[in-house]
Structures are given as C-alpha cells and as structure tokens.
Length: 156
Length: 156
Length: 156
Image (tube, rainbow over all chains, first blue to last red; front, side, top):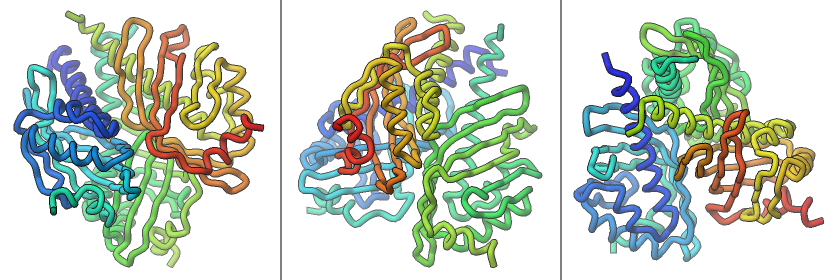
C-alpha cells in the first residue's frame, strides 16, 4: 500500500511531466525560443517526427538545428495539447501520451494544420522531468502543406 | 473537515474518471478496438448520442453493435477532449462534463467534424471508475455529413 | 520542505483555478448566463481583449454590458480550453496561462473562429479563486469576422 507521500508524489510527477510537455509547445509557439525547446529534452533525446514525413533526430544539436530552420520560416505557431495521460510510471521513468492540434503560418504564406498523437518518454533529472523520447504521428491524414512548411529543409 | 487521505482520494478519483473518458476516446480513435470501448462502460450503461441525431442506446451489446458498424465505415478518427470537470461527487458516483472536438474520415471519403459537449455519469466498480451514462450533445451546429457518416445505419 | 498538507493544498488550488476558468467559458457558451460570467471575476477585474481588437474593460458593470451585447448577437458559442498551467503562485495570488480555441455563430449568420492565448491573474476570495485579470491575445492571425461579430458594439 502506498503512503500518502507516495500518492502525492505521483500526482505531482504527473503534473510536472504534463507541464514539461506544455513548456516545449509554448517554446515552439514563440517561433523564436530554441533554447527553451532544447531545455525540455535530455541531451541525447530521441526526437522522431517521421510520422509527419520528417527524418528522426537525436540529441540537442539536431533538435536545435531543426528548430532554427523552422523558426526562420514560420511567422505563427499554435499547438493545443489534449488527452494527456501516463501509461506507465516506474521510479524515475515514465511513458506518456497526448494529442496535439498543431497549426502554423509561414512567412511565405502557407498554412499548416496537423492532428497528431504523441508518445513520450520521460525521465527524472536533477532539473526535473525531461523528455527523453518524443514520437509524433499523424492521427488524421496530413495536409500536403506539411511538406512545404516543415519538410523541405531535410529533403534539400 | 476532510482528512489528507480523503483529499488525495478525491484528486485520484477525478483523475481516474478523466482517464476513463480518455480511454474511451483512444479506443474510438483506433477505428478497431470495440472491446476497449465496451470496457469503459458499465454493463447497462446509457449511451445517448441523440443530440447528434443518433438513437439512444443502452448496454454493452448495443454499444458494441454500433461501433462495429462505425468501425466498418471509418478510416480515421481523432477526438480531442477538453474542459473536463466534475459537478458532483458523492461516494461511488459522480457527474462529469467535458467538451470534445471529434473528427473522422470515412473509407468512402466523407469527412465529419463535430464540436460537442458531454454529460457523464461515473460509478466506481471493482475495475475502477466506469461510465454509467454518456450523453453527447452538439455545442455548435452539426455538419450535414454527420448523418452520412454515423446516422445511416440506424435509419435503414 | 513543504508539508503534505501544503502539497495537497497546492494541487487543489491549481485545480480550483482551472475550474474557475472553465466555469467562465461554460457560462460564455450558454449564450445567456451573464451572472455566471460576472461571478467568475473580482469586482474590479481587468478584462482585456484588446489583443482581439476589443477595448479593455474593468469591473463587473463593464463586463456585464459587454456580454449582454454579445449574447444578443450570438446564437452559438464553443470554447475549448487547453494548455492550462501556473507560472507563479504565492499565497492568495497566482498567475496562470492557457490557450483557447473559441468559435461562435451569430444569429445573423457570421461565423467566428479564434486561436488565442490567455494570461490570467487569480486571487483567493471568500468565494474561492476568482479572476482578477484576464488578458486574451491572438495566437494565430485573427479572421476578419472577429470585428463583425464582437467588435462593432464598441466602435459604434
């Protein structure tokens, strides 16, 4: 039987993981805060948007490069996170899931709208819970503009 | 005055109810997991989508039949749950509310998009909190495609 | 080190603030419950929709007047709240943030769809946490219909 302390800790942990995910998206939505994005991930995090047609990345440097390019192109971003839940938590590791409605508008004018699901690996670090794995997949068919907006940098 | 144990229990209960609702929608969004859907409801649950123009149902068998038909037709589903809250909790029963943005694409090509509200009756069972009542209503006017996608089975 | 009581209280406070925000939007979405809206705010609350092109307001009377006009015009409202988090909580005051997908349909037929961010000041009162400050800004470019639907009353 869990102690009261254990039970409170579990609730706090869950909230901290949810807030880390929100912090990532809030940084995305500034269209400028690359440091804020990188800070949400462990040094060697798996960052996998291959479900959106974008090559999988690993670690801070690759994530930083990707968003530096994204932020050069995008004028507006908005990501609405719903359906957050954990499927497993053991000690300092957990698996979470969420949905996201992601939208953006490029300086060049293209609009993008994505309805995606997330599978998230969290680990507890000295700086709180961070994302060690972030896998995004399409929950609804992707618009053609996703390639135009986010894909071309990697295909060039 | 509530004990700490009571207060933690209340928070855990609320989270468990929210997660049961999410589990229902995650099963919906597989477009295949009828067992996962039925498992979220009590044996004789009230499942009422009459606000969407679909006849009210009761119990596992009717819910199972309905989703067997839905899943035959639908290629994609995505349901985004927001605004979850409880208006009442007494012992092993509670009333909850939420909003949902529900979207789907049929194999035949039709798209559906619904902005709905939910009134939910929860009961605590040996297998955790389950839905004893699920009433969905339109929060915004319905698209005509709702009948085309979900309604025809019941009208035939 | 916080006591268990402190930690539970913090979780309960956060939930109460979130629910106050939801209560505000649920009242909005009735298209009739002006009393329910006003009750979510402190007497002299700052209510600032200037980011949506609407003049900032202060206090119950101005909020009441605004929504009396809105509700005369609008046939349907739906607001989907996501990304709620607190950036600061000290004693009886807190700063919160959220996103909202807001949509409406006027009796005259115009549709409006807004993707907005919220900055929220909460204070603890004898009647629970209330909104002392509500600042809404556009997260994505606004549709032209926002002026048609919500702006004309103030420009006349």
